[in-house]
Length: 358
Image 1 (cartoon, rainbow, N blue to C red):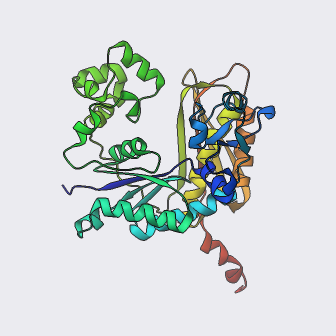
Image 2 (image 1 turned 180 degrees about the vertical axis):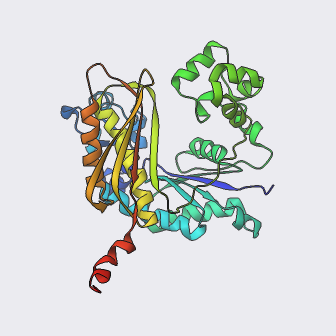
Image 3 (image 1 turned 120 degrees about the vertical axis):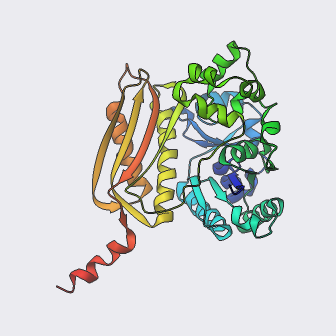
């Protein structure tokens, strides 16, 4: 089997970094992007200067302001974020056609072919970081490994402005001393359960027998065990025509706060919209998926009169669907967003010409 070389690239504190880029007077100052505290806003992104005060994404803005009273709050400017994201994604696609965007500020790249043609992963990473800085002024952290899981952990460890490479055969040694929370799929509740069992590091987790994982985690147990050993066979999902595009997220804990849930929904819409843009597609139908604290799962749909990929239209319809399901006795553990009834944009642009023939 060919040894893979996968990059996980993640723009550092993206929204806040863009605000500091466009407003030089904000550089080196604590910047928060999100809704105002008086309107129960939440933090979308905090600059690293703000994170030094204990502020993090999804924190209520009122709490963030108490932690750092002199923090500067800026409203999101998604059009500008998408503009810079498009530039970065274009740079990725110039390096390799095997790009899987995860959101506006994050993507996986398969550089296996480049490495087998003689390029060194280290130099690829350095050149990519330099090109993004030169072209956009933004700082990006990069992790390179033999699979998606390893590269993601590596890029997270190197932040900010990191470049971490995990060579083939060194995955287990790299993971072993790390806390279990670094492993994909291990949230706060799972981490608490592992702590009760005396398991604090990925190495301790990897040492356990397969039957333990099945008993503890059910059918996803073996996947967690494989990742604890540094194994992950998930492929890069490149841009190709699909019947639908979707994304979902499971909350670390059940949520009943509309503002916080909306923030995650906005991120999912951004992720899906970015896929639509890269594939030159429009959609007519949106779907939101919801899972309650008791694991009841259901979906709600809305269809547009015309095909679109306007973030504003998608957000408006998705939020309307979400608000209808918010009830005092409900808390949510998962939310998903998807689009379907897809049309290629060039097909739609040809319709007036085709109609003119009749």
